Structures are given as C-alpha cells and as structure tokens.
Length: 68
Length: 149
Image (cartoon, rainbow over all chains, first blue to last red; front, side):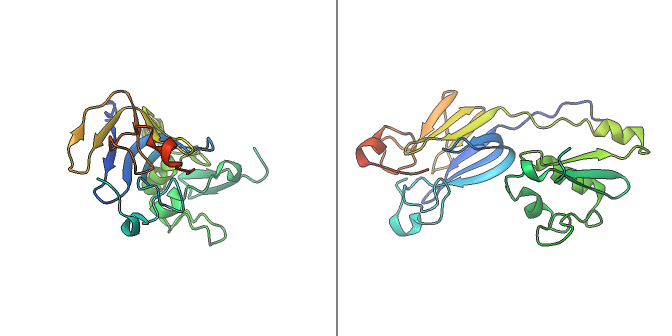
C-alpha cells in the first residue's frame, strides 16, 4: 500500500531561452531578506537584470532582451 | 493555540488555520479556490471539494499555517495514510542581494537549448544578465553595479 517510499524527483532548473529561470520541484527558497518558503513550488526568476519586481520575472526581458 | 487560530471540519477531517504562520504564498487558493477563498467568510469551505483533495492542498502549504487531522471516529486505514510524510527537502535556492542565485543540493539544470548541465553540489547562476560565462555567475555584477533583491 503505502509501504514504498516515493523517490523524490530532483528539483528542475531551466534557463529559459529569451526568458527567466524556471525552478520547479520540492525545495527551499530563501530570498535576499532571509524569508523562506519550503515545499512544492514553481518560480520564475529574473535573469536579464531588468525586472522591477526582483527576484521575480516581470516580463521586462521582452523589452530589454536577455542573453542566452 | 493562538486565539486567532481557526478550525474547519467536514466530519471526516478538521483543517486548522494559523494566520500568524501564513506568508500568503497563495498556494492553497491557486490550487483549490472552491475550498480556500480569501474573499469569502469563512474563507475555508469544507464542502467545496473531497477530503482527499483538501488534504492534498493542505500538505502543499509551505509554512504549515494550514494543517489537518482526521476526526476521531475515522477508519484506522486512513489514520495510517495521515502519516504520509511531508516531502523531504533536499534542495535550496538562495537569492543573494545584488548578486547571483545560489543553488545547493539535488538539482537538475537545463540550459536554453534544453541540454542538461553537469554541475557541482553548489552552483551560482547569473541574475544580472552580464556574465561572460552564462548561465553561471562570473562576478560581472560587481563591475556593472547590478542591484536587486
């Protein structure tokens, strides 16, 4: 029944072409103020340096471009 | 128990809500708006979904502001299921102020071509967009004066 312990899948980090860094899985996220969110989550983080809502992507890369 | 704490039951299980622990991660209502609706009072409607579905979403709460217990008269089988462990955390993402993203632990990383990158247990990824070694951080953010929370 529930005897088998489920293998946890590794958290997946995808550097999206012309877009942000996507992180999906079960992990701990610590922001620059030290605040932690833990558990299953999917995040899109700015990697173009231009977001007005860092660390989150706000779509600014579409205007500024982002190196691949 | 804090006096702001609340509980809600559907007869089978009781869901506990500790507002002081809530960081408004929005997981519960994005997953199950028929049960967890912050615009309604009471904001938890235990009739909005099956017990299994409610349990699934309660377990996703990142801070355990939401928790649940099976009600006493419930079958033993389900009590056993209540012990399904919280998923083990084996990976950490850390945002450095004015700097990169630090990844530690069990990750798979894919580049913009979808190719999986081999990596060490700890990796730092560029957030400023000016690294000469993308997707990794090469310290360029210090030269370019990158700022970012």
